[in-house]
Image 1 (cartoon, rainbow, N blue to C red):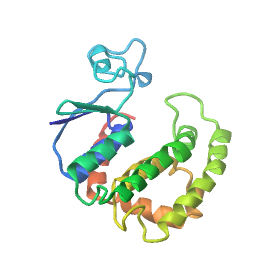
Image 2: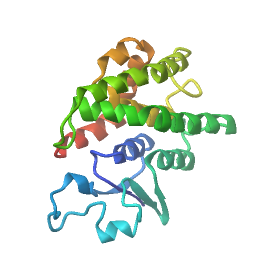
Image 3: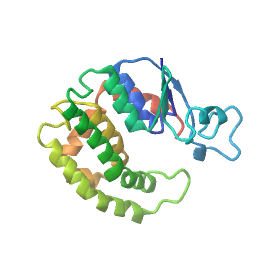
Length: 217
């Protein structure tokens, strides 16, 4: 049995979405980010510094998985593993596709994620901390180049690898999602907008998202 540790309002959403895409059963353990809790944390709430969770992930971050004794951390790596293990069209069909899917996942993490998070934190909400529009505007400016790269890649057939929706699209879409408040980025990258709409229209995403919406912000 696959166990996914982490609340829906975290990077665990990526792993939960994929589990629904793959149709695999899983146990969900809602571990909360400690920065979202008062000090001291309420009794009975499992969080990222709880002793029981630190036995799973000594780094103290979510998500993590335990897949019949195979313990993994880092959401994008978890998804690459699960897709490869369970096959289906979401997984690489060749070593070349595996390289491309790994490349795009790492690209999202290195070229997009930090700046996209600046957008969501400084245009949408920042866990009660002040928001600075200048930080968001700088992030938008920095993301124009990566969005142009992504738009050109998607212009070919609408997907990143193998002319079909794969784990690469899921991983990158979950990072790009953080930038959705910057509508000006998507106006100049129409292929990115159409692709993200297609990814987020999938039934597995909608199932994950409906559960996410039930969690406190």
